[in-house]
Structure formats: C-alpha cells, structure tokens
Amino acid sequence: DDTNFSQKAGPVAFREAEEQGIALVLPDTSPRGETVADVDSYDLGKGAGFYVDATEPPYSEHYKMRSYVTKELPDLLLREFRGLATTVASDSHKTLLKSISGHSMGGHGALSIAFEEHDQSSWTSVSAFAPIVNPTLCPWGEKAFTAYLGSVDAGKPYDATHLLQSKSTEISNYDDVLIDQGTDDEFLIEQLQPQNLMKAAKTANQKITLNMRDGYDHSYYFIAAFIKDHIRFHAKRLQSRKEKEQQQALLVGTDFATTAGKPITCKAMVARGPKQPLTEETITVQPPKQGEVRVKVIANALCHTDIYTLDGFDPEGLFPCILGHEAGCVVESVGQGVTSVQPGDHVIPCYTPQCGETDCIFCMSPKTNLCPKIRGTQGQGVMPDGTSRFVDSNGESIYHFMGCSTMSEYTVLAEISCAKISKEMALEKACLFGCGVSTGFGAVLNTCNVQHGSSVA
Image (cartoon, rainbow, N blue to C red; front, side):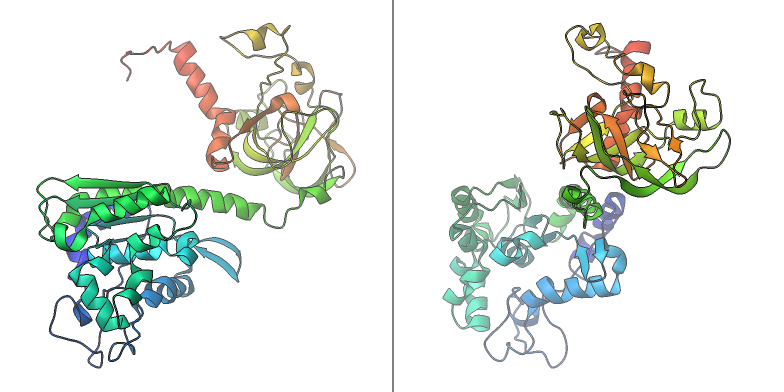
C-alpha cells in the first residue's frame, strides 16, 4: 500500500535521499491479503499492525511486523540487493547499514525497535514524526496490545518509554534522537504524550531533540514539511559509520604484532623511469630504524607533483622510485626511540616534517613550518640515515619520494613526518590534508592574503 509515506512525503523525500546517496525502504504497517485477519477499524488489524509479533488469535498467524522489520526485511535486502551491503569482509559477513524512522504508529515502531537491548547495534540512528511514545498508557496502545498480545502489560517490551525507563546502563549507540511534533496535533495530549519519553530519556542519559512545530497537526503532510531534516540527520550518521566500518574492514586479518621487526612483502606501484607507466610490483619493505615509523597505507590521493615528477620535470626526481605523498595510514610498527605514535595510531605522512626542536627557527616560527631537519636526505631519495627501506624482487633498492612513498601497501616514514590524527576521521578524506588541503589553505592565507571579511571570487 503506497498511500502513506511514498505519496505524502515521497516527492520531497526521494529527491533528498538521492541527493544524500541513501536508499529509502518503505515497509507496510500491517500484513496484507484476503486471508489475513482484520476488523473494521483504522487503529487495529490491517489499519494498524502496531509493529509487534502477535501472540493472540486470530492475529498470531500473520501479524509478525516486528520480526518482518528487524529480521526478514533486512535479510531480504542483503540477499536480493547486494549493492546495499557496505562492508563485505566475506560472503558470510555482509553488513547492512540502516537507520529507522516513522510517523505516529510507525514512530512508535521505530523508537521501540531502536531502543531494544538486542537491536541497538543494528541501527545507526533513529527519528520519528509525532510518535506514540508510551503506548501502554494511551488508548491506541491499550487496544492494540490487548488484541495482539492478550494484555496491556504484555506490550511493555514494545513501549519506547518503558524501554528507556528500564535501561540499567546508558544507551551509548545514539548520539541523538530526532523527533518532530506538531503543537496542533489533535492526538498530542491523549495518545502521543512526548513528555513521558523526554522524562525517561533524561533518566537514561539519552539525548533526544524534540522539535515542537507551531501550527502543525497529525496529518501525513506534516512529514513532507520536515522530511529533509530527518533524511540529512540519518545520512550524516550512516555515512560516518560507513567510513568507520570500511576502514576497519581494510584491517581485518591484520595482526601488526606478527610483522613488527620483520621485512614485509607487499604490492607497490613503482615508477621505473620518466614518462613510463607505473608498474605494479612485489617489493620488500624493511623494518623501521631509529626514529622511523612503518605504516600500512589505507587511502591515497594523487597530487600534480606526482605527475610532475613522473613526467621527468622534477630536478630531484630519482628513478626507480615509489611516488605518492597524500595518504591516510595506520601505524604498523615503530623504530627505537619513537614516542609520538604507536601501532594502531592513524597518521598522515608529511612531506615537510616538524622536528619541534627549540633551535629550529622554522618549527618555532608561528608563520611557517619549513623544517629542514631531513631535507637533505629527502632530496636524495633516502631515509635520514642515507639508505632506502624498499627492495624490489631482484634485491635492488628503490628510492623514496618526498619522504613519503605512499603508493605502496606499506611505507616507512621519519617520526617527525607523521601527523597523528583522530581515528574518527575517515582516512580517505584525511589523506588530502597531507598536501592538497594544507597547500591550498596556505595559498589562500599567504599568497592571496585573504583576511577575515575579505571579498573573494
């Protein structure tokens, strides 16, 4: 039945969902079919399945909407629409990142499903429009729970307010819950009772943003007015979780403790000469020496300087070498004396290091950081001790590039060339800070001299 969300909020909702890069899945409110038990009432039977698994006849045979939404439907999406699986470590470990939202009775379903103890890790975020938040204490809920479950008391596991009240520990999965409620909603006082949920949320330390919208009633068109906010709310959190899980998937099966102190054999794109295509080769990356860090490269960006060097225009360009200097990495192991990072830390390799020594006028300057500490050896394509950490399959050394050489699965950096970053930041975005963002920002401030209040084109 498509006369609810898809028609009433669809035109706005689908455009925004496409813009945000997420899919909308619209399960029905109740089971359908000629053999499905029903009554002549908008708030029971096919008009309102109440998102429970019914235990009482005649509803117990077909009314399993809770299991449908939480188990059957997600499984079907993974099985039939594999493109929705964001992280696939193997065929048996597929991940469907999903959020949940609903209006009125659907809002009750969304909140109660999201707050279930065993389901909290399954849902990335939750929101609702004019939800029934405390159904065991309202006429709609009392009627539904009695018919479907045999008693009002049996409905407590499906009551969002009760679920929050009964939590023994803080719900930490949701940084926020978004709810929109119209002030002119004819059901606000008797049926919806948002104040009950807000009181329970305070006790459970669960943040809920409740927007009371002046002049809005309970109609479906209320959804259309604010659906963009909700889709953006969910898209932001889905994207963030997707990035984190993708990064974690890249490290699945990686045990840094087993490789520390040993040579690592891996793939790298090697530049054999100017104007020659890069070649994928198997190389050996030696362990880091004193003051050095070996990292696993997770994300790479391509800079025009890489192309400039590959085209033979860089006077310091040495071949064969491993290009690349914009990357997001995870520390695999550290050499003697390294204290600023440790295995597992996320770092950005920096062409320009930061020695931080008090006699370095560049590191001590508030205006520049053109630290020359290892500039001499960088220009020679080697590490600070004058040697390379890369060996090809013939046992020949490969030059380093800009002290980074990130077009390899593993590389070795000077400790002072590692900028430690938060693990919360997606490495495919963080990599741009290695050069593109930092040089662009510097150009704006230093070359263009853009100041606060400047007009720019």
